[in-house]
Image: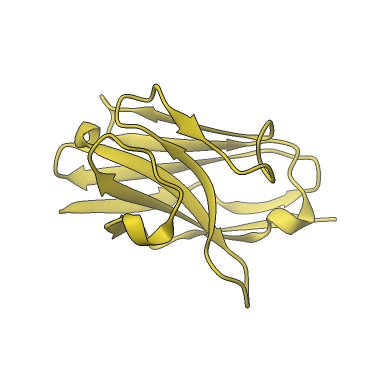
Amino acid sequence: QVQLVESGGGLVQAGGSLRLSCAASGRTFSSYAMGWFRQAPGKEREFIAAIGWSGGSTRYPDSVKDRFTISRDNAKNTLYLQMNSLKPEDTAVYYCAARFGPVVSTTVSSYNYWGQGTQVTVSS
């Protein structure tokens, strides 16, 4: 199993930046592809970013491409999400997730392990 703990959320003004972290423990972190998702009240969980186990492959939806950057440090068992040019519509609970193997995925159902989430609120 993998245990995931997110941190770094908070309140920020529109146009600002935040860096989320996801600390992993348990099985070998480098054996897992990782993803970030978010969920706003009344909405479904939404794919935000994904990265392969070596960090060489990444994917983003158009809504965050060029504003958000996913990265990982396998030596520190940590996943990151750098969020720039934040907008009020980015307000949500942000979750990190892990799936065994190298393949990057954008679907919620393909991830086996989830963190508890961290709140990001962007004020206008």
